Length: 274
Image: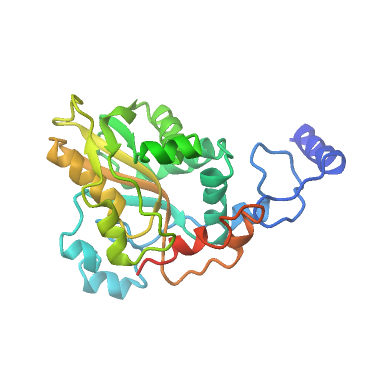
């Protein structure tokens, strides 16, 4: 511990660098250029959640009144069995996700995976999975970006859970609309029929753990789960790094990509969920 503290102190003196989220100076040496304060603000979702999609409840009274299912899950709208997320999509966590998604900070994938491992083990206790499947990007978008951020999270997660990685099972056949901000209806329409299982892929009776970066409305996980279930999957459960909660605002997230023309639009895209 003493050696690490000494190295951290020396690093902060000789190699000063700002946190990639808030710009405050980093005071410790780390593979993740995010300060301790921002990391501390990445709030894990604990407490009462919808038993279906994992939406946090406002109070125990609300949870008891609606039998622990949110209004969407009571309607049976989703094709996945259950979904859970690590944390709230607040300033700090949204900033980190944007760094992975648009700034190629790929090592964040493994860092996120480490935080999802206990979520999967605790929230899906007793459940067995045959394969981990990342939500795919459309080929044109993946070529443009150079990688799929969901796969960067899913691959180390699969290793840590000793599960098979199955990127080949699912493909996106229709690109996301060019429009930066989508309404609730547009979100659902944009993914309706946009995912298919790959020709020749053996999906029958598989128990799938589906992985993505953010749960906004659930439309993406739902569309992927629908394609997998129609191909014969026995079950599909979803896990994401973050969960959008409408009451949260993202004023600081706009600073994350200050050197990019994505700054003004990307954070707003995520906050349109109801």
